[in-house]
Amino acid sequence: MVKIGNLELGDFPLLLAPMEDVSDPPFRAVCKEFGADVMYTEFISAEGLIRDAFKSVQKLDIYPYERPIGIQIFGENIESMREAAAIAAEANPEFIDINYGCPVKKVACKGAGAGILLDLPKMQKMTREIVDSVHLPVTVKTRLGWDEHTIRIVEVAKRLQDAGIQALTIHGRTRMQMYKGTANWDPIAAVKDHPEIHIPIFGNGDIDSPEKARDYKNRYQVDGMMLGRAAIGYPWIFREIKHFLRTGKKLPAPGLQERIETAKKHLEFSLEWKGPRQGIFEMRRHYTNYFKGIPNFKSLRMQLIEATEPEQVMEILTGIPDMVKNEAA
Figure 1 (cartoon, rainbow, N blue to C red):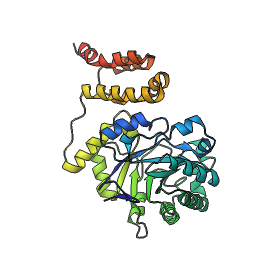
Figure 2: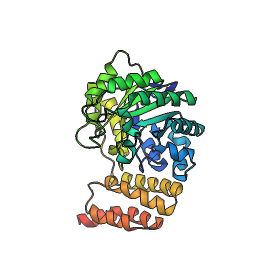
Figure 3: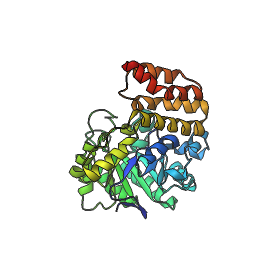
Figure 4: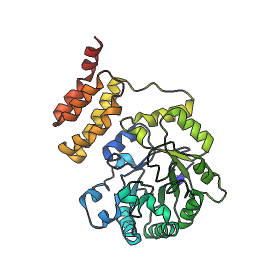
């Protein structure tokens, strides 16, 4: 049984990655329905939280259906991070997660996110301050290093464990790789295999099929996996991986009607949480994967992107089967 503190997560939990402008409550809802075990909020600016910025505070929204969930925070100032962690804890998540992995220039080059991997003593001090400031378990998501010459992930893991974290997720790329190239899981396995590491180690990067999930589980012996981009518009990836790990057999891909109904449900959550204008806008990034492979998708995608009213979008989604029939005729 894998645990974060006293929180039991099962034998091999699948985690939904915190993705900016993606991992909002509507997206988390459909991923939870199809088997994601652990949720994370989008990453939240510590400075935004302590200044009560609307966008940052809104990201604290948590709903009963998505638990267990961690609130992820980022920042470069230790005092601000400590204060932000205390604010996040008041939203009553199951744990607080620290982002030491974001590679985006405006974050990392200021010393936050993956930028802190260039200053391990500061990373350890910040982590200890956060652990001491909240009553909840604290976890971390990080990368292998700043670049291929600064991969010290075993030392990073030991320092973070010594600072009191309860679990560690490692993305198998450096900051300089961004999201390019292939994720390297060998250093993740080195952390997991190290005799002094006893907290759960979760692997992240390039898990996009049930076969790869089983292969990496067996090869690298991690305690669980975090999925990100593979779940965008395809929440069934969690269901498919779990079934394959349990039975060794692949589930059939979701049929067209299930794709439509899930997209509608996702849209309804989005409209409820963000309102009509923003709810419609933020759904657009998901349609490509929801309907990947159907005939004449380019035309359909343009209709969905150009629609500005909820009723229009629902009508387009409802009409997809007829469109497909007409294309096949």
